[in-house]
Length: 305
Image 1 (cartoon, one colour):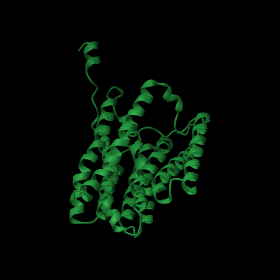
Image 2: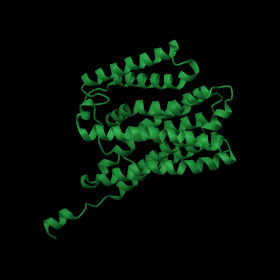
Image 3: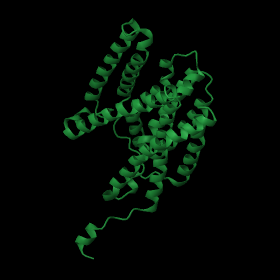
Image 4: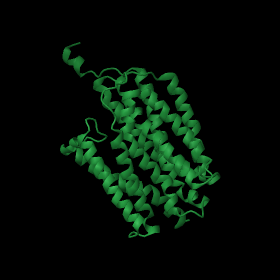
């Protein structure tokens, strides 16, 4: 075999790499399914708490996305420092426990708190589910792992509506969360048995916990103000105060990120045209698609019956 032929032949991928990818993708699908299923069941959840305004019930869904988005960068750093497989397993355990707490929540506030806890589990799962797998793949074949992992996200979005609707036809929304618990425990049991830490944890640098707190506060206050503005009045003192505080925290987050040696978000990356264009496109797609996942079920159920 000539050198040119050997260079053109793709490197073989070990079976252990495919197994690890399947486990990581399963965790990613579990997170995505739970997110979409909550939007499908929003009408049923709101009906279970008739004395609570829907603008409050919506934090069952939006609170989860706030927590996931806010903790995601920090979770990735923690996984690098403490071990990616370990953090993945912890994330699955937290996610499954929070699913049970969501299912048995007696009040909407307990449900919102349980969903916030679940968002922390999801934030731990997502970055670790890919980063723990990549070192097992040959460098020339890692794009295959990334593509397969990324494709598992739309899979959960495709399965969740039909499965959620079927569950809601024969039972209550609480079973959607109950279902996540045994699935999570199965993934955890397989992960503990099959996965091993490949990349040694790194303790270089320090975590930007201040930036994480500022970013979380800014996002949470902004979403809270948008969600409650209709109830409290857009020009009311609390809503204006929330918007002002969100702007202050976000500004402080930007300054903190620019001066920290290892920030939560490295804004220098946005100098590259490909980076800011890809993020702008992804933001536009996310705004459109995530809102549709909530509006469509409500329209189909309440308008079309």
